[in-house]
Amino acid sequence: MAESGAPQLSRVIRETAHALSRPKRLVPIVLVSMPLVYAQTTFSSDPLAVLLGVLLCVAFVLVAPLSWRLLFPDSEEELGLGRLLVYAGITTVVVVFLGLVLPTALGMGFTFLTSLQTITVSWALFLVGGWGLGRDIGLEASLHKARRRAELLAMEAEQAQLLALRAHFDPHFLFNTLNAIAEWCREDGETAERAILQLSSMLRSLLAGVRSAWWPLERELSLLRELFALHRIRDPDAFSLVWKVDGAAAGISDRVVPPMLLLPLVENALKHGPRAGHRGPIEVTVECTQNGVRFSVENPGTYTGPRPGSEGLPTMERRLQLSYGGAARFTIGPAATPARTRATLDLPTMEDRNTGAEPH
Image (cartoon, rainbow, N blue to C red; front, side, top):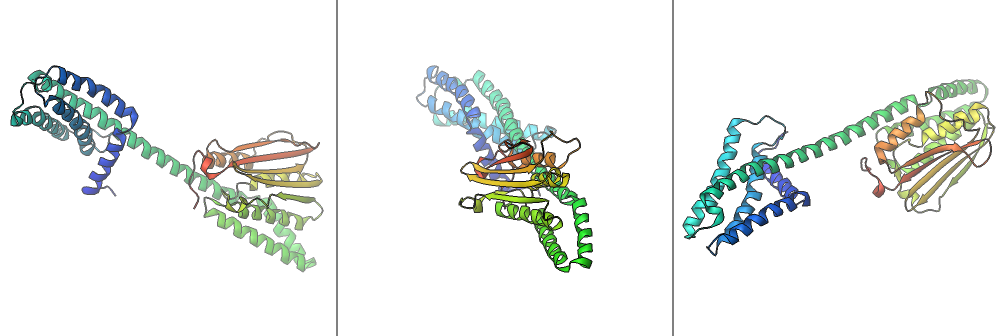
C-alpha cells in the first residue's frame, strides 16, 4: 500500500538527508557552494552578505531536491506539466524571498547574489540543480529497492530449487528401499520395522528443511547420518563409515547452513562409490574454525571428472552462490589415497557472507 501524508514526508526527508550527506554528493555541493560564498564575500559591501550567501546555499540543498522528490516520488514516471509548474513555483518563491524580500526587510545594501543578473542565475541553479539531485537520489532509491526485490526473488528461487531438490531426492533409492522393506516384511520383520522408522525420520527432516532458509549444522549432520544408516540397512557390508566430526569445537552448535546443502555431496559419494561397486570406507570430516566450517567427504572410486547431465552438484553450487555470494568454496577431485575421490566445501561464518538472507 502506498504511503501518504506525514509518514511519506518523514521517509522522504530522511532518505534525502541521508543521500545528501554521502560524500559523493556532499563534496560536489560544497565545491560549488564555496566559490559562490567567496564571490558574495568579495563583491558585496554589506556585512550580512556572507550569511545570506550561506543561507542561499543551505536553502538550495534542503529545499530544491526535497521538493523534487516529493512532487516526483517515482523517478521513472512521466513529468507532468502541473507538477513541473509547482516545482518552478517553489523555486521562484525561495529565490525571491531569500534574494529580494529578506535583504530588503533587513535593509541590506548591495550584494553579489542579490543583483538582478545573479538572482536569475540562482533561480536557474535552484531549478536545474534540484532536479538533478532529486532525480539522482530517487533513481538510487529505486535501484536499491530493485536490488532488494532481486535478492528476495533469488531467495524465493532458492526455495523453489530446494523444493525441487526434495522432490528429486534420489527417487530410485527411495523406491528400492520401499521394495526392500516390502520383502523384509515377509522375511525379517524387525529389519523392516527399523528401516521404516529410519526412513520416516529422514523424510520428517526433509519436510522440516523445506520450511527453513537456514537450520543448525547439527541438524544437517544428523540428516546425513540418517541417510548413511538407511543405505546400510539395505546393504550392511557395502561400506563402512568413518565419521570425523570435530565435536569438541564449541562452534558447531552455533553454526547454521542452508537445509540439505551437504546432502548432494553425500549422495554423490554413495552413488559413485558403494553403489557403483567400489568397496571401502566413506570418510566424513567436519572442522570448525573462526573463519567458518570445512566439510569434506571421501569415497572409494577414482575421480573421472564432472559427469554430463549431473544435477546434484550444480544445484548445490547455485545454492552456494545464492546463500553466500562468492564467500563459499567447493572443490572435488582425486583424494590423497589412490582410487578415491574427495569433495570439500568451505563455508564462511554468517558475518563473512557477501549476500543471502539472514537465518531465522
